[in-house]
Amino acid sequence: MYNCLRRPLNTGPGGESLYLPAHFKESRTEVLHALMRAHPLATLVTLNDTGLVANHIPVENHAEPEPFGLLRGHVARANPVWKEYRTGSEALAIFQGPQVYISPSLYPAKQETGEVVPTWDYALVHAHGTLRFIQDTEWLRALVVRLTNAHEAHRPAPWKVADAPPPYIEKMLSLIVGFEFSISRLTGKWKINQNHPAANRQGVVQGLRGAADANSREIADMLSAFNDEPHA
Image (cartoon, rainbow, N blue to C red):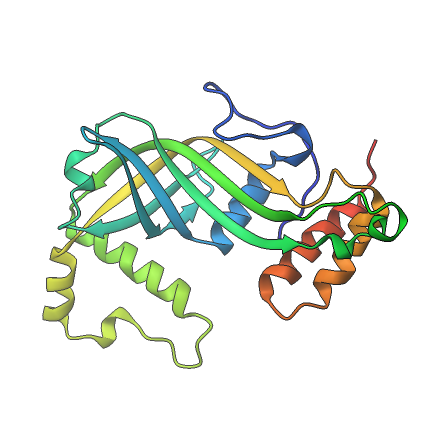
């Protein structure tokens, strides 16, 4: 789905949006978009007159327009974010990918020197950009249909918007406001033990592969991909 080579980060103006040592940087736009699509519940952070506001919103991810693409989603009309957002101000959408606790017991170095401590492995993306809010009913209907179809696709009998009575759907559409988030900058942080010796990395992969949860297996796959790549 996405792997974890260390490449120079494409930040553009404004610098980093989080603490990001060079060995944890992920810069490839296609890799960042893959994580965003796989984990579409974004934490949308905006600034209004009272301070920072955070909303948690499933979004639709688009790679176009280049270089960074855009996001689409909707909020409840009762949510004041669409009225209080400062037009043109920078917003931040945070996508949390897989994350897992790493025990020192997974490192061969524990037996060799004992000089190991726990850590937390994770991957995430910060998307910076600006918002515009949209109230057009047909735009909203098309968005809701696409989001529904995308998230129902894996089900044996997918639910469709058309399954609900049309007057009910019209009412529901009147209760939301859409938005388009134009991405101006992407920052990826893949903190998955890349800074450890190869033996410790392999120990983490083996340990996480034996875990039952999806987060552990996903981190194991990402670190395994890193292990398979040549490094200077």
